[in-house]
Image (cartoon, rainbow, N blue to C red; front, side, top):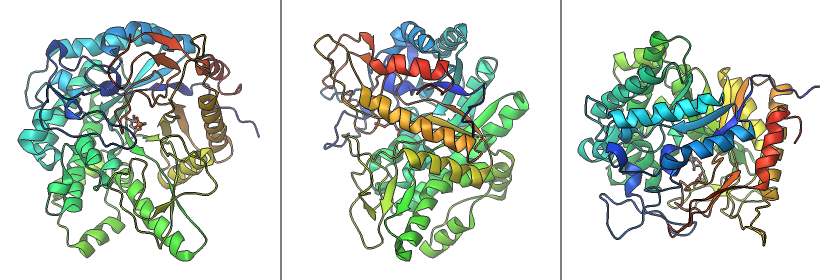
Length: 479
Ligand code: BG6
């Protein structure tokens, strides 16, 4: 069978504003929740401060200064042949505190210029409205997404930018990896998803479900409103897909892995199906949780279903019924029943590399939802070392991406998945989300910036740059 991808397949690359823009306090931007998160590494967790500590190092403040380099960076994306570029809008550039009614024109202008620059080369912007960076003020004054006030602020922000950019941006997503907060043990996830420290609540998991409910309603309002504004617009949801496999054919492993998959599906179930799954209602009853959901909310959810599903895919995870470990430092989608998969190798950051898991995920999601899928993140975080001539021969990255593209092609041609596109993560080196490092690099383009904040910020293409260029030129035939 031919493994041809559709002619309009959206090849590109993905980033998030806070991980590459820098300019954290420029042109009226307010501090965001990520601006108070320090650097860390694979062994040392990032610390969440409540205000800027002048002695601390916050890697996102400057990041790789895309704010001032975006023209040269986009020129390189165009040279690779990008059809699209996924980034996010920093909410606190537009509404510095988050609860104002009038937006910051300088922030709006920055994204106008950025989108114009992309469109100049025929690159379609793909925009996430909230990628781990709500205004800090909203987290502090209203307890983040615990409050319905923040729901209103998000809707106001979304309407402002969608209305402004509707003729430049067709593809949108509401919340990045909204399902990460299901891990309530590691505070980083709840903080960046919702601006809430769930472990400080008397019932952390109940609080997480309540905050997520407000996000579901906000997302549905935005989807419905955007469709009325402009029927051309496509508004997706976005989840991290780390499939859980049973460790063995022991029915206990199989059943536990199945139950664990609810952690992955719960969020997209609500956002794509437009109602709460029965397994969730059972869980709330069993645990004595009371989630405030009005009848109006239910009607809104049913009306504002996501048009497509964006997903990130980096790795799979494996579940064993008789295991119980702590996941308070887990950054790889592990649960307390996770074990190493003996069939897989892992990256230097412990993420288990599993290309077939991508095909498995795409098939499972498409059969479940029957809406188009978009792989908006995938890639290998690795430490790149320039050789004696200053070249970066990142064959390990090429191998990783090639193996995953082979599998996505099978998902399309054999499993019948409707796949919109593929945007590898961190197409230019940027700050790692989980660790705050620069050392964990994903890019086709190297940036001379280091974990201690030093570096010239100079850009340089890696070997994978030319490789990806021919992948796109051949629509995935030359790998
Ligand atoms: C996803 C996020 O979790 O994975 C990105 O959407 C993140 O923001 C990416 O950067 C890779 O994670 P990390 O920790 O390697 O940067």
